[in-house]
Amino acid sequence: MTKREAKVVDERVNRAYTRSCQNISIDIFDIEKVFVVGRDAISHGADDATLEKVLRTFVETIRKD
Image 1 (tube, helix red, strand yellow):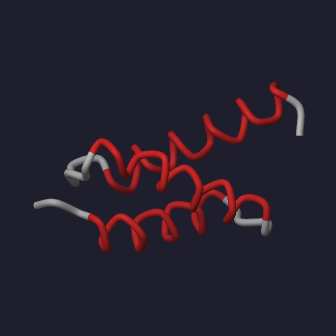
Image 2 (cartoon, rainbow, N blue to C red):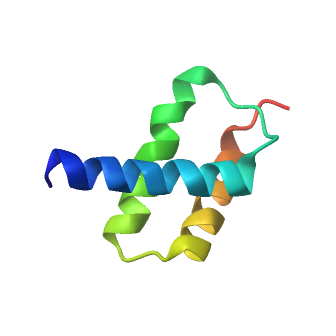
């Protein structure tokens, strides 16, 4: 994957995270874990709606509030 492709993937994960988990507090050290989960979902063909569900499900397991 090129740097440009990686940037596009990370932007997609960031948008999905913002839409689905906006007011959920997580530990700062868990942010990279969110991106790993998101990148994995995208590599398996997740569309935006599925990506949001996957991220929300994961974030529910690490939430701090």
